[in-house]
Image 1 (cartoon, rainbow, N blue to C red):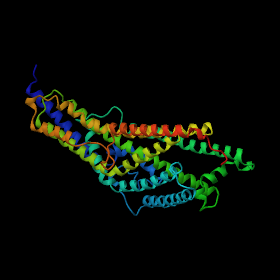
Image 2 (image 1 turned 45 degrees about the vertical axis):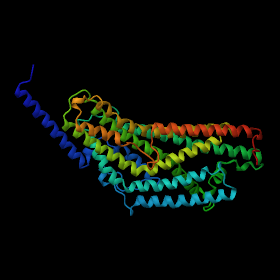
Image 3 (image 1 turned 120 degrees about the vertical axis):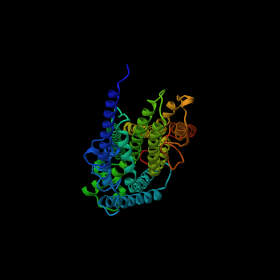
Image 4 (image 1 turned 90 degrees about the vertical axis):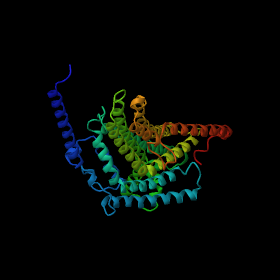
Length: 439
């Protein structure tokens, strides 16, 4: 039975009131404050990690604790920027000392990993500082897109963005902490065994003597005391943190963008096999343009971090592959080696897999468009289809490569080829045996 004119009019008035209420809420959220703080935005989800990163001189932003992203800005004359400058100076000094020690001892493929580790950290401090400079220009359109996608006609996801980011951040953080502790445990155990078997002065078995050997680059400039030991641990922890944080930050960004594109795709897929007026297609296409512009802007700002992250991960995996066939001396060395390698490979795969979801979600609306009948295929639908297929949506390293599943499998194929070459070389040198432990 059809509705009466009075019922239709009443329904239209109720719908109009709902639309006005949504517009009013969006307007209050756009002004920031408590209304914006309650939303499941990228800024709200990532803010605790930005505060943590500033303890290590990363992302020098002012007013990072503010609820309003418009208050968070990059300032050259600020405490956070001064803190970043201190880290760059101290890290640069440490890197030069390590380079000098390696060049005097003889640089080779096996011992240069520590130097590369330090150089990558310095480069990433600079990269994150550059990203912080464009933070305010990124956050304003990003926050506006978040506000758009968190109200009808878009549906909220079952699991909030904040929950996803916390789950990933806490998990990777705990695994990275275990790896960091295993590094010192493995190093100290090897040091004890070396002293026990090769030296008669067993008084040097104490942990303090190991630290004196481990942080020799620091103690060339500073006397050995509790302050210098704490400083060495702090600076070493900062290098380790930024080495992990660059991958975590890419994953956070990818998860957020992928969720927004998925919400957009769900809205379009809900219109499958339905008559859709051109006015609605126009609104949908405008929202898609905003999403694509945001992705392009983020990609341009984060490309340097993506490039360094992928190049570093591939190099370290290849370097670790050199030691796969090396007979290690103690079981704890094997535990650390395999844990570190598997953790790095898993972290690298996570970067590619989460970023690939952006591109996958961006193509999902095509399923709905391909079901539009020929008599309803208007010029507006054609424009929308061309808009989806004409531009690649995703993250890249300076547009030289894209973070997709295809790129991940290509990298795996390269690493497998490299490992097969090492197998042949190892077969020739296997008879050489293990070097003297006291050499």
